Length: 465
Ligand code: UD1
Ligand code: CA
Image (cartoon, protein in one colour):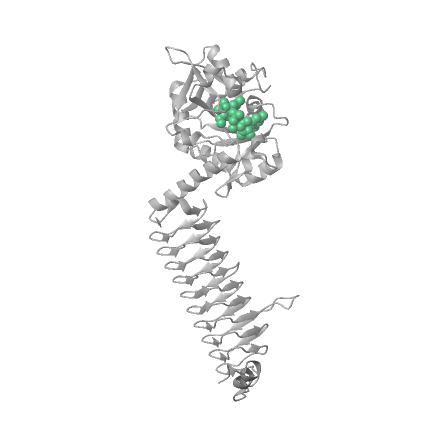
């Protein structure tokens, strides 16, 4: 039995999106919707996938370039029937089942497509249409069945439907399995004599019915799956479905998600079991969160590794790497290139970028650490800052094991603080500090006895004591 070949229609502009970007490139949970369709047809068993491109062809090609697909070009968008016909040359005489799907129905599940292909094969049909019964059929093609027998007669587009046909709630999902040879023969017989002046692919189904070929209809069990995305409202609804599917998958895999409706997890992200995701949290890109972590509430982790047992609370973590048992936040901002080694802490109102914070080292509050390398068990006091930038160049700060940086210190890079050294609070340090030393850079403190009292007496004599 030959593996089916799939054709995905992605040449249209998607006028109703009112967008500069081709519709099929609009992302759902971070992936162009076309890629979701592609995944589904592949997982349904398609050996080859041909994408029909046209509007913004280069961008569409680029978006799926690494997905091992072939392309057919539809120069002018003359309709879905015309679009499929463009794949004929690429198919090069292929005979067998041809799965046709639209690039704008990204919620289709592989199981549904596999069932469509299986039913098509069993019936040895010329065409098998995937339909669905929906509450609101507005905009979709309707499945017109023969009274009495229930046999499919044809598919009528919303814009061409009579008022009676418009009441039909069984719709064409735009997904079909065809016998390739029968399809291309039928496509030669369709005409653009309809409301939109287009070559409709569903008309090929009508041609096959009229010619007495075997045409089947398979109803999708879940109407949500077959939803076509035509405007931004539908895009938002589909996004919610995809998002929820991903979150549900992680809950099944052992992750606790306290409020699934407010949690966003990108498809490539990974999360270990027994991790708890608190509300309003985003785990994006290629993030890998270990087990037994607590992420959130109100946190964003982007393309970062979070070691097991770590806590990220009300913070943003971008392209950073956290070892096990780290603590971040509340209100920390870890920028790209931050590494927290085991047990390290980045506390409240701390910003770190391009820096390594060694094992057990702590930056608990109100500090900026940039282009720095901290050894183990370093303590950085509140308000301490690495002055890494002179307006032209960036310089590195090295703080060796066990050093103690007093509050509000400025470390003017390049500078090295030796192991176990102390930096006095408020010091601006611009020369290297030896191990075990105390570096203090402060004007000496003066005291003028009774000064305050004298001042008060001068400004308001009656209040003075
Ligand atoms: C289509 C079906 C309709 C079905 C609905 C399901 C037709 C005529 N109608 O309508 O019966 O209920 O899908 O969602 O097929 N495309 C091209 N080239 C073109 C035109 C379209 O590649 O010349 C692509 C589009 O990029 C899109 C897909 O085909 O991915 C569907 O086109 P769209 O215009 O959205 O069709 P609908 O009006 O939704
Ligand atoms: Ca559509």
